[in-house]
Amino acid sequence: MNIILLGPPGAGKGTQAELIEKNRKMVQLSTGAMLRAAVKAGSEIGKKADAIMKSGGLVSDDIVIGIIDERIDEPDCKDGFILDGFPRTLPQAAALDELLKKKGKSLDAVVEIKVDDGALVDRISGRYSCAKCGAGYHDTNLKPKQAGVCDKCGSTEFTRRADDNAETVKNRLMSYYRETAPLLGYYYAKGQLKSVDGMAHIDEVTRQIDQALG
Image (cartoon, rainbow, N blue to C red; front, side):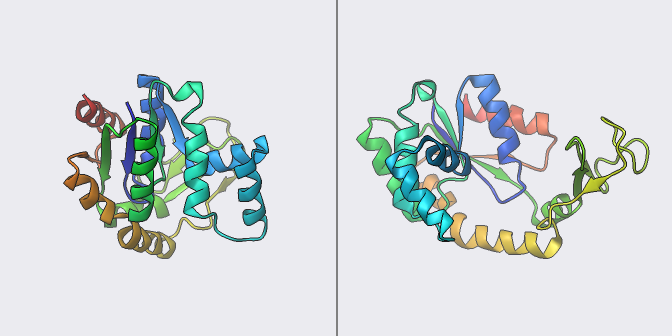
């Protein structure tokens, strides 16, 4: 089974991809991780990506598609893959369709994790983590049992990502709706779109995804 997870930043795509990977023996393919692996492997396309990234440029769609092309031929993808973070635009979706058609493969489902924008801004801007062990917390939804002390390691040092603030999250949402949201209509028209409630508890979102995938 080959699927795509769609949803705005902070919708929980990464978390759900990890759970699907574990439960269904599929492979999570994150574009960032694939790029780093290709660069590390020193493949021809990895060298091209490395040169572009070192110069501060954006890696082109052709290179990303080329890396996906190489990656899905690897043995661990034989039982299926989960694309997380790609495609982001309609041209990328069309290029992915062509690639899969060339390989005699297809997408089985595109799962949209639907979220409430206001709640999403609160969810992301309120999150922080232990600076020592990385345990995640939230200002309102997941506070440490003892204020200022990490539940897991007892550290009193915490950190927040610089881009986890309301203004940055709103800008990222705007980019998502401008560039990626049109994919919802694209995959709906192809009969591949399934939607789940991303505001539910993680376990419930997982259950809905399992039901959608059949």
